[in-house]
Amino acid sequence: MAASVLAGACGTTSGDAAGAPATGASGEPRTIVLFSRTEGFRHSSIEPAVEALRPRLTAEGFAVVATEDPDALQGAVDGGAVAAVVFVSTTGDVLDPPHEAAMERFVRAGGGFAGVHAAADTEYDWPFYGELLGTWFADHPPVAPGTVERTDVAHRSTAGLPDPWARVDEWYRFRSAPAGRSVLLTHDGEPVAWSGTVDDGAVWYTALGHTDESWADPLFVDHVVAGITSVT
Image (cartoon, rainbow, N blue to C red; front, side):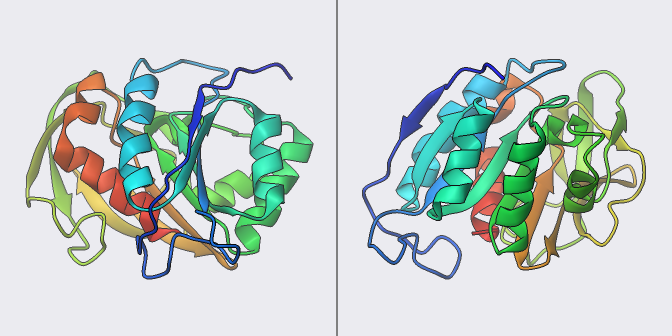
């Protein structure tokens, strides 16, 4: 399965991004993997997303690896130093069975998973992924202005947001309500962001982030960084 590696970067400062040090037992920074392989529609916002998230997560004390290579992803999660994996607008069938098995082991054993936007348009034939996200993407209208409402004002990814929050985005509709998940944000009654757990692993997802401009908005990037660090 051929794929390209986008980039890698390591943070050198330690931090307390989620109530626990970002360093592992060896004292080295724990890693967050930004995975952005696409086998369907490819969002132009992927590269701005990676460029926005890398320095912010590094500043939180994490090493950051951005890749589209499922073998690199499997090697990272099997290596024991990964705090969380983030699917950044992935689409389609991006993992083969060995990669899927590695991800399932990682999450069930306590690894964190975060998904951004088209992560919900991914791996429709992998039952564990449905368990992980709680639902899948169904459809969307054209990009348009909209208003986001908070249903959880205490979660770290929503606590700093205005209520209501006016945005221009691509407003996803889903096949069902996210099963077993705590909905954090809504738009016109549709879930926009949620969190939960799978065995010992923590999960967070936001449907926002379709546009390139989203990733130049500090408030939106704060929302995503807080969501990612909440699962570490």
